[in-house]
Image 1 (cartoon, rainbow, N blue to C red):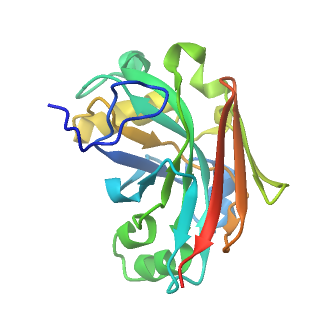
Image 2 (tube, rainbow, N blue to C red):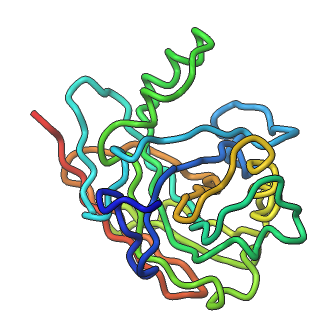
Length: 223
């Protein structure tokens, strides 16, 4: 049963977020730019609801030395499903939007060296920035989406979902083998190459076509 305390997704009235799932290394060039192998199966992790923000402000704690942006297509799940086939996967999508997966890269490196989960590097407050959504019927094919991100007016990332290692329908099907996907769940689908550093005062501007989705985010350092 939906709780009034759960955040409602802008553009998808009545749809409330419960879980935030993310896929890593889903573009060959991004995996290579961080000296990571290209995965043979989806690399999945999650972010807590506390990291979700629609307010357009990333807050950087003072103990982070290397915060990075990662711009991604975000999928909103519209109906519950378990063991979903790839053929049926897109029927479970309510809409599409944009997201900035903020990563404390310095902390992530430490965690990876210790073979620990990435939670602390990925799950801080405001580290899951999300735009408003367009309904699924506004996008004919999620593997034909172009998105861009500019930092302080300079283009930094261009993503073409046709270049994903694992397409959206495969991500949904694979994830649903392990967990029951619920209405309102979000799936960050991976970032293309061009990730980089953030600092206080930065302005990030992302756009997605088709759908005319935009995301504008300010960065603020916490003293």
